[in-house]
Image (tube, rainbow, N blue to C red; front, side, top):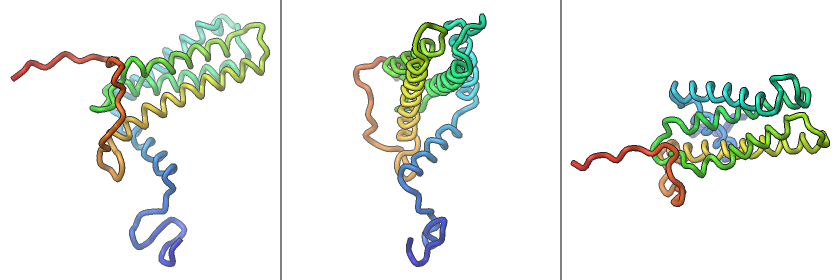
Length: 181
């Protein structure tokens, strides 16, 4: 701290002393706050559908399951799947979803199905697999939100140039070519 700064930051400039990671976390939260109504609705609907898929795929609707850990895993995985699906809807230019973006979330969902199903497996292995599947889905969501942050906010509030783009992937939602003028 400098001599003219208080506990919340530098008084002279009016900007708080925020570590880079904390500032980035705030920017990611701002990306979520800037989502359109359509993206929020898609997130909620996708989370509900993911929960139904997970409950149906592992037999938890019929009463089978791994107890409270299975239900906690289904809840967390469906919330992450909802946010991932919402991140694919109406993306800003430069952050379009590609088919490659589906690999890790799908792997995470199927890991959650295996980890929350009733089977003859060591419970600690199922919990570890469940945590790993959640980590994979959280990592994929972070990557999507980070790409959107770079495109929309960038450094110091302006769009960032040089955003990495996957050259091998096809767009998830291809657009029709525009007619030439």
